[in-house]
Image (cartoon, rainbow, N blue to C red; front, top):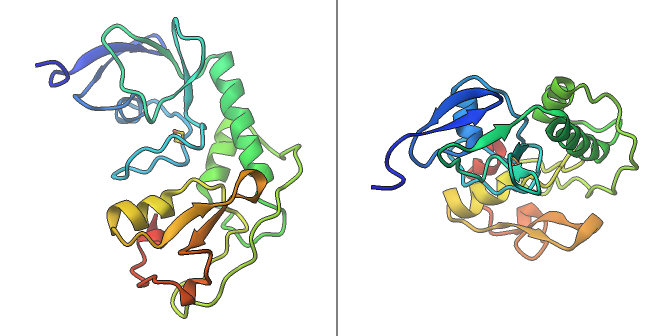
Length: 199
Ligand code: FES
């Protein structure tokens, strides 16, 4: 039956077999090709919102998010040609610009890992205004000063734990992770399960 057999496609000039249901990113990672990725997390639904994982697919006008795209037989995918790398670098640089200097984020973050992988040093863009920290919950401190809105925490809360406390509110540069109706975490319906922390 269609979709239940492995298929072969070309990944950076090498023939790769993708298992049924695997995305380009999953097939690439399993076979040893690194593609930058930030919002994707193994075991969670791919959301395709950071765009760090974009690749070029021969014959397609726009780059595709490899975390959301399943390969088809004979597809020709470039993960590190000039166009793909240029886009990946720009995405990571833009995201890095939101992480203001002096923030408390871990210097061993995934964002820094991919920035170093792609040779992105300092970001040229002005940072956005990040939300103030929220220390209202006795068990979990919320510090979003390095948040890139990957929404892993939203998916963790909503789709894994089915608590649906964490949401994504407002628009554009004002967009923010919120608890319930933008309540302090300690006053929200959060049960402190910690799924968002590990995500
Ligand atoms: Fe694919 Fe974020 S990892 S869009």
